[in-house]
Image (cartoon, rainbow, N blue to C red; front, side, top):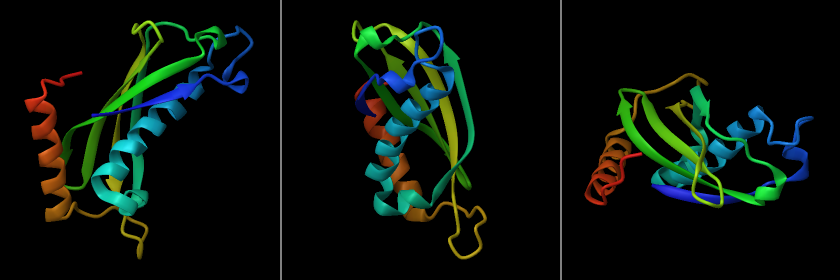
Length: 137
């Protein structure tokens, strides 16, 4: 599990003076990218987003100042990695939660490819570390 703190920017606001729903996807991506780079190094740039979902729980406004976004890998398939993310307000309350599926891309063909044995081993180690730490969001 990794977490990032992101400042709420004026440009993130919509006409209702809360963070626009589309901006939450950027917040999730920042945390998810941290996890992926930590797991796979520069090769993480060769993973592409295949699916994303999000549930909005509470509004975030500029007055909140910043949010904490946590991300963790929750599983994998033959050619995909699943993650979960949460967006927390400064008081620790849940603002949003979501998940994603990313797939490794073959740089020569531009198409998805199976995970390598090394990538699977890294994912399994991350899953085991989260389980040992009792992380289950």
